[in-house]
Image 1: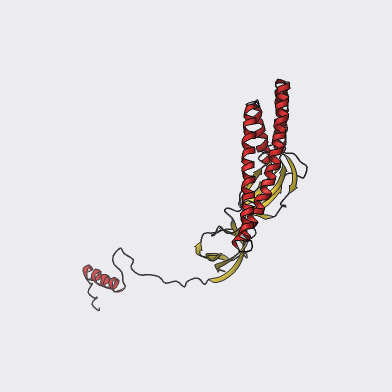
Image 2: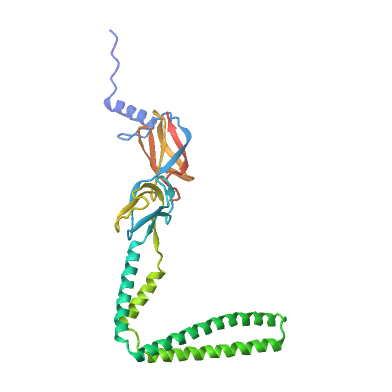
Length: 309
């Protein structure tokens, strides 16, 4: 019977195993190796995305009024400050009519209080003085233009000095007459009974109202697309009423379609802006936030996309 081989001590086996593990890059309790897998194959594709608005914002009429014209159409792309609707300012016309009535009433009351023979005579004299002053001012204006032309001719050597000096003296004499006429008119006005302060205030108010435009424009305060116009020509919406809706493009989204079964690994570039850029996908629709504020709804943008089948 053959003798059995001698059994190796347990300590020798443990030492041998430790040496083998060390030679393979192992340490007790630590994985120091790596498993190399073949990287997935990706493709680079170019897609065209379209910017779409993300918020519908109402546009209100500040003062109401009557719609005179629609300056934009549904679906039209507009920029900040573009006119959407033109209104006739009915509130302004009502204010002017009310001030005119007030002025007429104040004038009638003042006329009754000042209806004396002396006051009537002073009023007629004042009117004559004002008419003469107006005529003199117009004559002075024409003389000033003529003297300016003579000055230019003299400076260019095209007019004789004697002729120029004669024109200058005529103009200075006319200017003196105008100053004296203005001073006399001011003295007459100071002597005449003044109009009531309330009447003067109403007259100044009417002058300011007359300077205001009779129409006003409702404009968009942001870039976007006209989604809906809620009024028609001839309508009279109330003050503060919503008259249009504009799809804002302040934070547009880029949207594109991608084939089913294709996995998007990364968006390497969008609108010339390098990535990677964050995106979402639902079914065949790919979305990402526009990387530049220049885009408006309807604008197209090129995407460089890494995909995997």
